[in-house]
Image 1 (cartoon, rainbow, N blue to C red):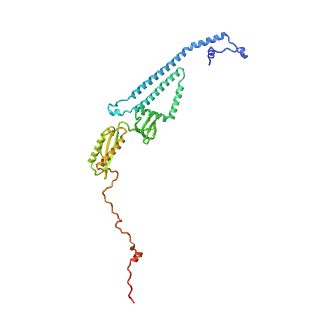
Image 2: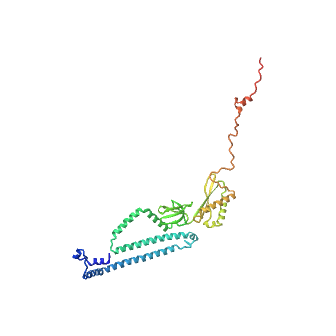
Image 3: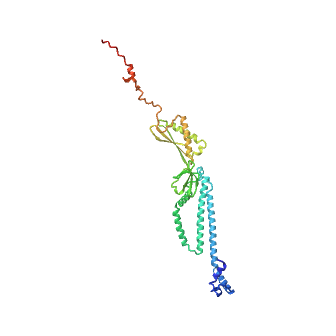
Length: 366
């Protein structure tokens, strides 16, 4: 709509058509009519300019406050995340606490938390500002809010799995249940965490496969990389073996292994012989355990088995497994050894028996 049209409408109702207009000939307005219309338009603008100015200033103030508040909140969140992302020397003042700090894990966790907080802050601030601007223009917000509520409920029912995944991912990150580099058992899959997202967590399996696990499907988490791990080795020996000799041999292996690189860094405690785990008729199981660095229990177990086997061979201590067979037991006699082979002379009708029978003497009767 042009300015002239607005002025004409503001001036009031148009005069009745003149005879020239009824005949189709355009009428030329007089100077007095134009002056009257201009006066009416100026009066209308003069009456409403204060309202327009108030509305414009109110909208400008709302927009400025929302922009400033959003910038301040985002800056505060960024500073908070930067403080969380700083590398600390120790968690509780011990060397063990310092070893538990994973820079990549802290960085990704802090970035995810910062992204979620900034998005939520921007949504709340800008959404509130938009509603306040609409209210300034005297727009009834009740139907709009009702429609938004119905649409939100419909979207919530349709995308409930997505919402569940998102909320589960947020709480997993906030609670620091696991991070990049951790080895976890998520129930549906297990492996090393290579990426943590708000909806999906990526795991690298033992065979190199990548598992995409939805956060909403994870009901329980077993983190194998937090705190420390336990390496356990079961050694099976004969039931008549000297237990003191077995303990001394394993103790020598443990002392030598705990002083060598890199096992002295992986071992966070002494290698202990816990005792007999089970005793059978022909064997007994000796339990050996050690506290190790997180994720290094399998490596320590393999090396410990290797060293114990070599030490037992040198000490002439056999390692058995399952049911054992005595080495010195005599072989059972063959039941058919005393039975003679069948002979052809057993049958009187055989050619061999006929040939071997004696020749009868000649008869002397006349």
